[in-house]
Image (cartoon, rainbow, N blue to C red; front, side, top):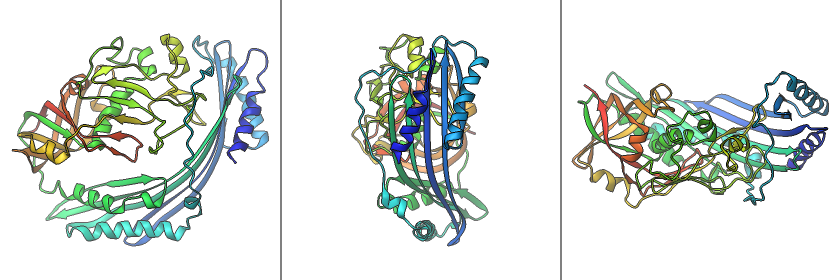
Length: 447
């Protein structure tokens, strides 16, 4: 069936005439979502989608159109619309198709027929089981706000008039739960989830225990005294921080002058303990991919090695403008033009366990969550001032819960002040492989 999509894309791309450049993204998918409450189904949704997006480039002008169907008459109309839209575009001297660069793709086939054949009753049973596990773990769990199951299957094909025709497909499933913990008149909310390629790889026990722990640990939290201290970010939050940093290391931010790391390739921008790569070739990742959004093979792209900036992520347009080669980092959907983005962040982990890390800290904060990231982080200057909660660390042990605090620094300073990377690396539902980070001398604003 994926071959059918590739054939549709190829035919449209080969319709290029004169000095036209054409590329096409075609996709099809189906998904199911289940929500249960108190052991009963609250909602059950099943959906199927299909669509095509066509880009036409003539003399630096880009015309684009898309539709939610791949019927032949719709496909022909989308191509006509994209051609018509060229006349309304401004000239972009960097616009153009990606030229094949000879890099061989690492092929993945994350397609699981058993998941597609799974019946509705089995999906509901998993969600009901997860809710029951959560309710049974702690008497302070007063309710479970939402317990969900989701699954999806997607196929996509890309073709261009430069002679590129590629396709990919994959399936996945996931669960999530949001319990409410009550003690006296106080209520706190927790959350945990997991995602995998098969139901056997979903860890319901871990999801339930993490959700309950996150819901109960902030009961009785107070506002601490202001201090400068060490913070510990578990892999999930380390991913949040590095995700922001990686957004500053993409070619669009570079060519638009919106990153504090411009002109610093080969310089130390972080602690020598930190190394991470964007590597969609890692087949064990849920984010693994063979091709980028312009049909180039995905490849490992080192970003930071022992604290030194290796480079930026690029698609073909930002690479031309920066005078470098594309890193195969184009991100594109049916309804969008190519942008730049990381696919799978892979961090080099340290040696010590999280318990060993915490035992070495006299005064610190084990961060539970961040709040206000969108408004509290400036991706141009690097200023960092966000709300947080978590558990204090005192004399090498987790202590009282705290909330209503602000952590302040700059992203540049946070990277340089990393004093340890944990040995607790794990593949997250996001597809990234991350470990805990320990960052010294962070300003905590409290009472």
